[in-house]
Image (cartoon, rainbow, N blue to C red; front, top):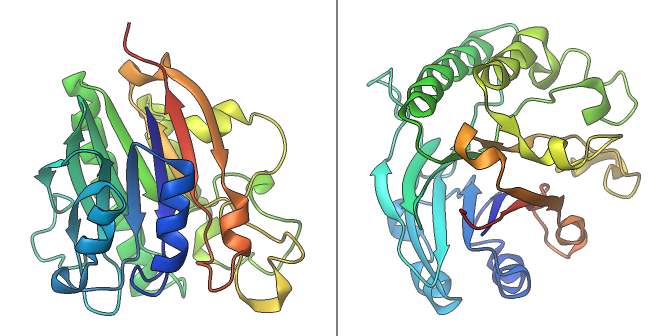
Length: 259
């Protein structure tokens, strides 16, 4: 099974990139973030024509998450991150696909920091950690995939000091991500690519794509039952170089059959 995560940065604006990638890469499950579309604006017909069923939670202008399943229909299990009923931001969705529970998440950016946006980021990650621990305790196979808006380690960003004050790199942000790994979740992409730099995001500004000045923000975490099934992982970098591309590239993992 091939599972991908892709911050699409506006699904309707990027359809001409998304659909050819779906046709070429043929992921079995796709977690999308930053739909930037309401529920009614989600391009269901185009996604179905590409061979995918979908569940989604949209939001006008910002946020929005979705899960696609090739030749099938994801079974929606949750459309929000628990822990704060007042949180109206569309940042988390969960569905069952072919015996695996899959979550698509779009964590808050948190800038500028310090301030209320950074406080919200850390609180959101705290809620994620609590929910992740509960999922892990069930013993079911779970994938937490998405844009975590955290650069886990110094090697996950190009050599620069320009991000020193950025919320993506703060010790508190990195500690929040580390908390998930300490629970027992596996960073699948880093497991496969254990050495050196690997990036999933290149800002539009300052020629960062052309200079390969990237960051690793998009992660796929596997629960205990799935660790032994991990067979490969990668980044489809070429998608970032297409005309009208998102500032993220799709990240993906493959799982062996359950034997």
